[in-house]
Image (cartoon, rainbow, N blue to C red; front, side, top):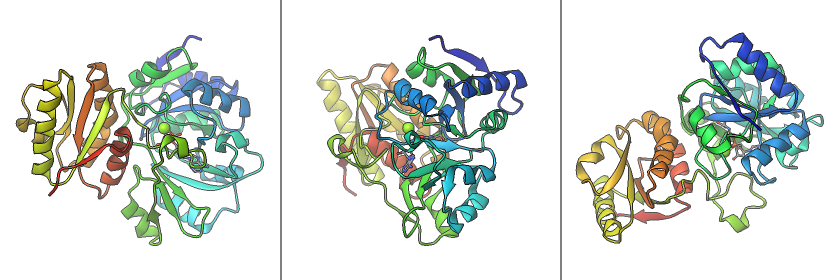
Length: 350
Ligand code: TXA
Ligand code: MG
């Protein structure tokens, strides 16, 4: 199929483009669109065949469930049942925004959205183009990140096309996504709220509303993953091998310098994902992508997936990156880096 691309002003989306995208969704087609986190690959969440097309386009295994996106809080009642009071409280505090709630699924919602589970994940995105599209189509829209399975998520329309050109109907190009890492996934179906995936809404902020919230992402090797959707350790991976360095900043830099020289001596092309403050320590033995100032987790998150993809385009064999801290948005960054590295962590010491 030919993938059409419509460039849309995110603040003032052209009604004709919205109408076209809504028509594609109503007809069971696939539309990629920006959210404030990453680009989503949307399909009608109430249409099992349309949802199946998402899995096929992404080459995503059938056991990894999909988030339903809504424009109005009332749509929660179409999608979920036995909704706990905590869900309304969180929706009031964080929606529209980068928070996904896992709830018990309503019978009318196709089970394929939840990969056969009894639950459904729901989010009301804040991006003006995503909101306008959801209002125009007036249906809940199932949308995973608009990348090929295990690849870094797409934060620009160009990334979507890199992975999905010819496999989906339409891309709404509304420019780069402002947060750059995915939503926080919070499971409300158990005795206490559990963050399954750290993301754009901070654990600390969730705990400000529901103090008993805990962070419990699971990291599984590929063969053990069948019962744990979206918890594969290999995720967000560039083609290159990624090594993640932890420990003190100076110690990490020194180990990364050492490793850069060693790999270069072996004839391997090295790529570095660096904070602005790190660049002086590295010579021209490597391809360098600067993420942002060291303490600016928002800037680092915004650039992360583009930087991973950029190093892939430059054909590097190995990518070295260090831990930027785990508080605040650092929790999401650490999670994405750990998965990109498929668990290859080098402890450089204090
Ligand atoms: O920011 C985001 O969340 C983006 C934008 C497009 O909204 N979407 C996104 O979707 O990242 P995806 O499919 O790439 O990741 C969704 C995550 C996966 O880890 C999936 O396993 C989890 O949410 N998830 C979805 N439905 C679930 C369910 N019913 N129970 C447990 N986890 C679920
Ligand atoms: Mg994804």
